[in-house]
Image 1 (cartoon, helix red, strand yellow):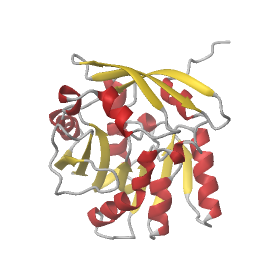
Image 2: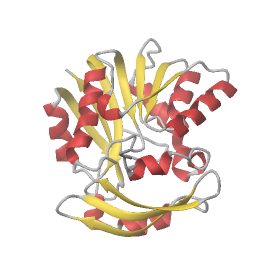
Image 3: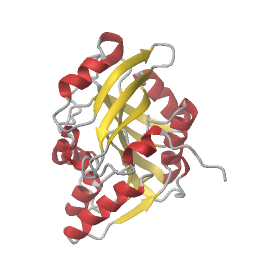
Length: 258
């Protein structure tokens, strides 16, 4: 029988839900949701899709604030954790397992979010990453708002990604090493070592795509998005006042479907 080899992002998240919730980058949920609410004009009648929801931190917080949320993710393990956390808080949230490249929705949502590299830009080819954006666009109604973060291509031109990861990581987090950034593809290849929820230490060869703001603008325009705004992404403190620079590891994108 033919056995499909798991991609690194599938292997990483298959048993890494509890440890994921202890990573330092998940600490910004409240501030990030404050930004989302403001961008959505506090309209709790909106139907919102969380693409690559992981363990559901934004989905759950926004639901607690009264929004109608649907969370999707490729990882069964991440979704199991999300459902468990929602149940503990007596929240009824629809969490579904889906590949972000092939979402089954068509003009069903008023808004979509895709934060903390929720699938995009983890795919192994640019075409696959584009499919995620295309799938998100298909899921949105006309006039729908799309808010996401992605890796900023300006950053690795001026900085060492490996050094940045080492400086921002905390004890117990995944460790990234042997980073090799390719200027021709804007992909960072690295070795990621982490301890899964059962205490097993695992090592994976990973690669992620960094995007220039001009690329993101062009990709979104090709999918009929308008009013594309790009900012610097600060953990837990998203703001339209943060102009994107080469000092930002991630960019924050806010756009609207025609």
